[in-house]
Length: 221
Image 1 (cartoon, rainbow, N blue to C red):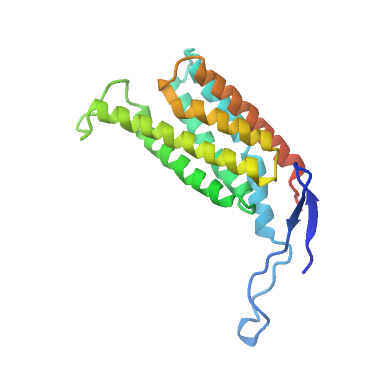
Image 2 (tube, rainbow, N blue to C red):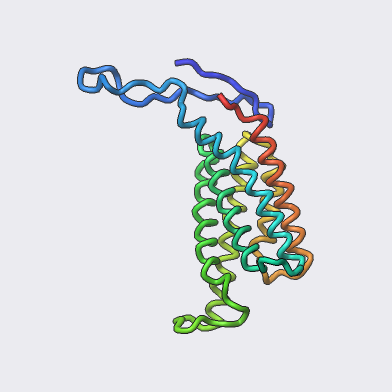
């Protein structure tokens, strides 16, 4: 079984081996054929390369919300759009790292980050220091939930940044920028300016670098 070599951003060879579907040729499994080119791997990577551009887009929207400028759709719509794009970028980044040695960190970061976004969603529409009618939680408890959700999102990005840094698949500097941006993201609305804006700029730099490097250096076929 042959193995092809491709150069990664770190200068090391990327070893990509063909995948097989099915077992040895027996009379019982004659209908199962080997997939020598691992088509599903390239499909996942093609999606990941394209969807990674959602990360710089999310950073732009997140940065816009930190400036305190009134927008026609309202801050709620912009915030929800930024969170949605961030979730897409998390899935894409975890998919990109699925075949690397840091896949466990990437998957853990994805699950923690998605949990944070799920907690953030029902709280986004509530005004500050307000509890929903009929809610079993008080205002102070909801504030703790909001802090926990922001911390979960930040922890998810930290793990994904660490996975990028150690993967040797893309530029490790983008992983460092992603981890630095996660500190501001985890602080959420409780951080004082200009920390959230700086975090958005770091996230923009990391997302642009990841999307650009993934599109140029990761093998397509």
